[in-house]
Amino acid sequence: MDKYKSLGLFSVLICVRTFLIICSPEASDAAHMAGAALSLIFQSLCAVPMLILYKDKNFSLKKDMLLGKFGCMLYALFFIILGSESFSMLWEVTKSVHFPIDSSLTGALILAAVCVYTASFGIKAVSRASWILTALTAVSLAVMITGAVPKMDLSNFSPSADTKDIIRYALRDLAQSGELVMLFVLMQFSDKQRSKSTLAFFAGKLILTEGISLIEITVLGKVMSISDIPFFTAGAFSQPLSIQRADPLYMLLFTMLCVFTATLQIVLSVMFVKELLPKLKYKTLAAAVLMLGISAVSGSFDTDLLPLTGTMIVILAVVFPAAMLIRRKIYAIQKNNNSSNNSSDTGSPDRLHTGEGASQ
Image (cartoon, rainbow, N blue to C red; front, side, top):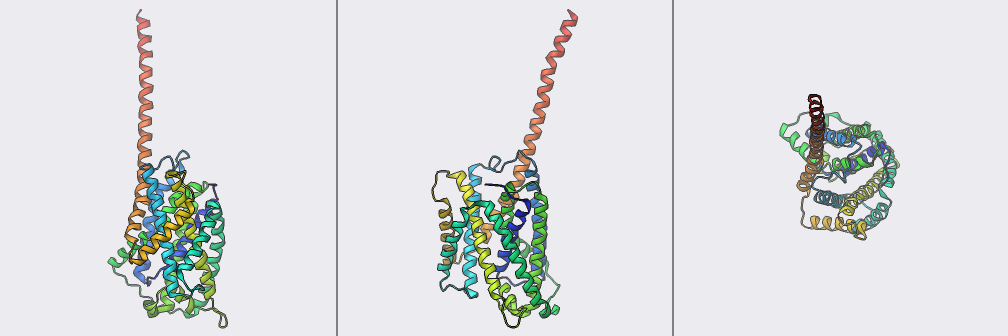
């Protein structure tokens, strides 16, 4: 896979986060906003070991993978589960928002076919597409803000928040932040300015999360408690033009972000599957089928995969990078000690030989 510019890392991750925000069924409040900020602080600290690892030119995620092939399997499984969550979000949104396809299953199959096709172009093509989607996101949010500002009622916002609720929302936000694992994996395809791109992503994520939450709270008020998908409800209430609704713009953004997110997760899962089963054919198709299957099963049994994905995020984005960094530091110290010992050992015989020669 070819490398892309560092800011491509920002656009890819911000598109994934935008999709999650759009699909979120949770009602926003002050505790939700504070929890998201707290989670973001923790995530930014988790990114430090990642940046230190990739700063070393000799570091390779493939060669330095913790637990070898089992570690690769965990990453592949994580992205497949995350992809299934993307399709589940698609089905949930279509239950509450008008979608120009009667069957949500048909829509998922069509989008899955598109994802399989686009995934064949690789990570560099995904990065290029992210710039278009970032621009579309900016336009959509500008339209929403234009319509929302005159209808905002600041009295709807209550700044009080319980500490327990803040911590609960922070943990939930962390469990939904699959882009933190993506950050660690995608850094290997980025150029040298990874720190700049990572900082831009966390800043953009904070502005995006808090900004949309503020719009939903101040525009919707009590209506938000009965809204299935607050983002689309806020969009319906925030119409900048009296003769033309902006809903199609938000549906276009949602659809394109869904395809983009699922495609990225297919690409990343296939990347690790290749390490495990290099001779396996139709890897991309198999990954998409697995995602649809897991999504269908979890939806049928009403299974919440958030505890599983949250645990895997902690393991793959917090524990693994930290363990890899510690292991490399220990190896470097041992290597330096061995070099010092070898130097002293090779020097001693020379000095003894010189002394014997002098006495003779």
